Length: 242
Image (tube, rainbow, N blue to C red):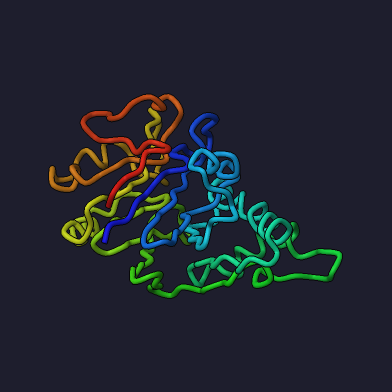
């Protein structure tokens, strides 16, 4: 079985053109949205999708450019499609309460009384793995900001999605034979940004690993580039078979 991964955005937190980093995974008649920035709302229509079509969401971490569209998503589904089955929201267990704290001022209060995250989603607190339609996903804790929990997503035999992450070379070597593609965070600024992988970090990996890399979460200067220093850039609206 193959999966299709289409990026709604490949831009970093400051992107004005490419949308913030988020991908839609499709297989077997279902789908999974990885992260939910506000830029998804209009960009998803370019794929002939709407929020009504999204069945599952996974959240990598709680920076605004990865969750600032979740309130709008929740309101859209509760108002526009109230009789449709609630989407399932997969959240690393330690992030469930902090996520609600980040969202509740916009979602808790309503004319029918106070609500919780469970009123909008089937919330699954993930401690290690979760399964959707025969595919097992494993959450991988990553190094991003000291003291802030962040996670990547591993779909065995298919892909690894790093989320916002520094390079963990030993882990990438460990999963090299398990995946066909590694979607990896990479800032392309000419600045030392220690919370993200740099081009030099990834360029120093083995050729075998580099051949599996597709870079994401980069800045607008590279909107029209397909590669840089021999490394491929993931592009919005392009459908990747994995």
